[in-house]
Length: 399
Image (cartoon, rainbow, N blue to C red; front, side, top):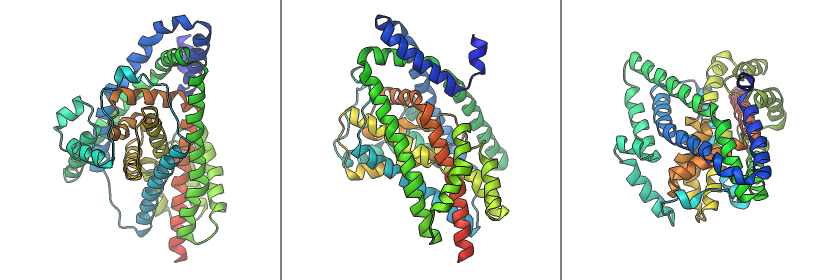
């Protein structure tokens, strides 16, 4: 049986765990307490790997970043950044219009006092930025971790190639450990779903369905409204023929492969068919698979806002904008790691004084709905890579 399960994809295993957990919770609700240990161990594992994940990935990405003088590459990079931030802003606004709540064990974990206004958030940010790096890692101070990762990454850029290779190797090593923890997700989700459904009943399922609808609906809005607006601005023509072509030829395959990296050959071929210079798409497509993460930005923003609404934290416009920027940074840092967008949610949650333990529960909610969320997120990310590459190339040639 274990051999058979091991041959199944992770998303299939999570789906089986979800169905089995719901069934056990409804049929044997009194046995739910016996499965608590599975969820607790999984949350503990996530809590232990998330800080080092942020630190190593961001530091490695910055230290190995290669700048380019190509005008088209710069235009594409601007589109990547603007598109990711716009997706995060959209997700935050949609979350305000259609607020989601989650079934979280708040009393057991929430020991922090949420900030009352944006000045408190900014003050907390400044204090967190100057934290001791060792202390930041131990206490999961993600803002402090991010600050040290960026600083060290910038300085290591001036080091020799051997040092940069060490950073790449370290990043790959951390990614393998993360992959192992993610492989344990079905067991953790089984325990968490059983406990959650047994305690909250059908309300837990409604909450899962609502947050999934907000996530997927926002991603469709970004793909069919936000991205076309950006493309229309730079190309000055009807964007939808190009948008629909990219969704059909890139988005569909990415939806089923659930990997931006695996979809790179598809995007390279599409860019070539559309007449983009090889010197451009050979750089922009792999780069986009790394830093162009509109779907991940939506995931981070929506799930963070769901935690905010669950805890009853009031969010003003300025704090929303800060969250959008942080979500975009989180999204870029999630590249190349399975479930990376979920594992970086604590960084966004830390803006609101939400404890790491609660943030880990939010991650598990994301994994429960990842059957559709992850596929849709990847489809948006990958199709946007080639969309912006082609659009920037057409705009440059037209000029």
